[in-house]
Length: 194
Image 1: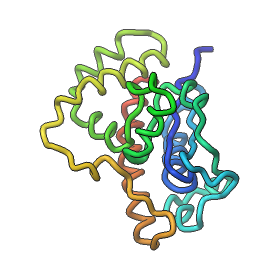
Image 2 (image 1 turned 60 degrees about the horizontal axis):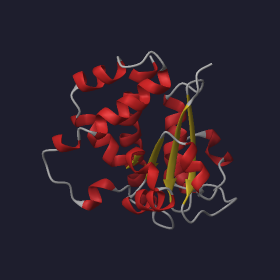
Image 3 (image 1 turned 90 degrees about the vertical axis):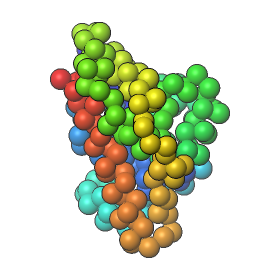
């Protein structure tokens, strides 16, 4: 059995954005090859997702999630860390500087996936027969494509809106940002897992 590729999604309280990303990635990716977890930089430890976050994602199992605090050990064990905003990416790197090259905001990685030429990804996938190594190589190929972003991004383009304590519309907007970005990331990792 090959070692699983491990993804960690991170937000502030670990009750809205990062658990939604976790659930969507788990649904889209093969569990035998990819492990997905989430945590918060200021987690509401033991708390469940708010009702509007559960409604937005529409998953029956979303009420089983409980918030947990981000630790350096979680970061060390992860092959890919996806912060929901720049502040989460920064917090991860401050806790574990060695994680810099495998830490992105979710929207940042999704944008990089979209601009990376297929041939770069194909070359990365051909580099190893092992699924986990293929995924690591694919993420690195995408990271190195950062210079292909032709439009300058506003800082807010890299962040998922924080819905906590906001209106239903904000929860829905936030969820749609999470869903769109996770779909792009999942498509990359699905190719590597084939």
